[in-house]
Image 1 (cartoon, rainbow over the protein chains, first blue to last red):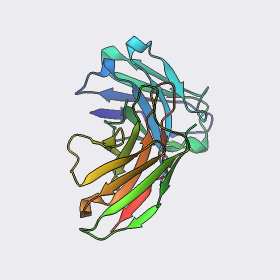
Image 2 (cartoon, each protein chain N blue to C red):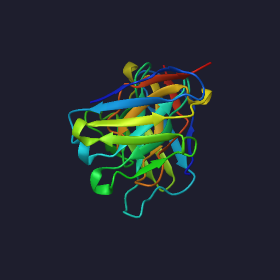
Image 3 (cartoon, chains in turn red, green):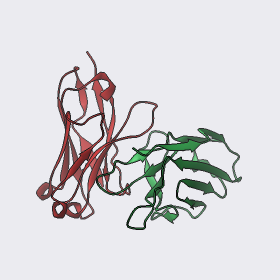
Amino acid sequence: QLVESGGGSVQPGGSLKLSCAASGFYFSGSAMHWVRQASGKGLEWIGRIRSKPNNHATSYAASVKGRFTISRDDSQNTAYLQMNSLKIDDTAVYYCVRGGGDSWGQGTLVTISS
Amino acid sequence: EIVMTQTPLSSPVTLGQPASISCRSSESLVHSDGNTYLSWLQQRPGQPPRLLIHKISNRFSGVPDRFSGSGAGTDFTLKISRVEAEDVGVYYCMQAAPFPHPYTFGQGTKLEI
């Protein structure tokens, strides 16, 4: 199970940090991804963080690179998405996803508005 | 970045009848490890996506056997042998290539009765 939290309403240029609490599987050995979905639109991959044996390596979509940072705390079974310099186009439901796509959270809504 | 193109984007179906969705990738999805990381997701109204099929044709745990996947290289198909009311929603193909490649999704196909 994956449970996201931390969503809310922020002004353009602001920051927000999302959390994804995992349970029921071997979190430490799993890559974790973030995917977002604007209202009525399709799915957009944001980025991933690999497991510790893979040095927690990260990769990001071009649309968020340099603004968003993915991290994890394996002791807390939690992944994070730090979002900076937010734009109106970042408004979406944000999902955390286990590597391979076999487990999705319910999502948390992020609204960027002035 | 690999572009995924689905057809049709909307599919009216009749209960009990078959349905089919196609997905084409802009380049071959065969990875150097020999696997093809093409998945299908279902998103029911108001719900997060859920995995139906992975690596072209492997049904995920709990997925009814009326769902099947096929294809190779750049062309893939999701088939529903007999549509049921609970199948209404949007279906996405997803290429889930290993690090460092990004995941990419098709535009989605809306299945409606």
